[in-house]
Length: 373
Image (cartoon, rainbow, N blue to C red; front, side, top):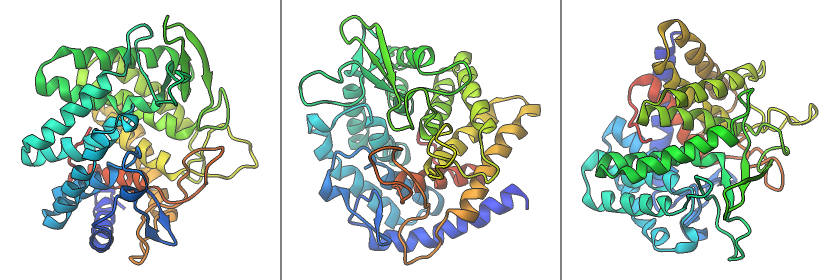
């Protein structure tokens, strides 16, 4: 089937299901489902890093349908995050994930000055996490002992667009320099020669010297956590799109070639490309995120290379739609078998950003996308 025809059919299935789910979940900020029903992290932890993706889903649906229900839910989600914006412990490297799909999306769609203000406050806070000695943006907070003051993670590549947006909006080059210096550090210390990436890298926070890398949410040190691969693939692509610096596209291509080479015959992505052979855990979010990045790379490469990247994205999305999407309207989530981390966390459940990136990828194929990043 032609990919446009297929994507249009999937788009209609998404719209049909999400309209029903949105009506019954309009007062929540969901992360996962419990017995098929969305939980509510508005009540559990307003500072949780995924709390912008529900709003992002709603803006994508509003952009494609103009149904006011979606706009209202998205605006509510954005307003609820003001509590996070005023909570120091809840401000970290993930500000892009929270305020790009909510405040920046709102500003782009409606011109809201309040939304622009929220996004600039978040961008300023993210820029303030920059360590000039090591030229990196610090990742998580800690208990005040400074134990993680030198930690940076590959996920931050996907949060840099908040800084690029602030630079483009204010013409203040500080945002640009912080974003590109972090990207350069990621290129040097996270990206391996074969295109795989580290998840966590520790630097000496006073001198900036490299200390060590950690396996983080992957199988172990030196392994290949697939969601981290996807963050790098899409993140370096976005740095290229915002800066037009060719080296970032070359970085993205290196990661993309590695990712494509490791896609299993089933098209379903494991939690870690180097997990033990007897482990069958999957992470559908990694597939959806990578598909988004591959579709953006497709736009950036010569005509004779487009088929490789677009074809790989379509293979991932078809596998998800055929084998890992739940179209039951009594169940709130779409994607199944998502995994947050290889160790110490639950495996193969629904996660809200899996649904978000799956929708974003389908919208890229149908031309309905509100480009958020």
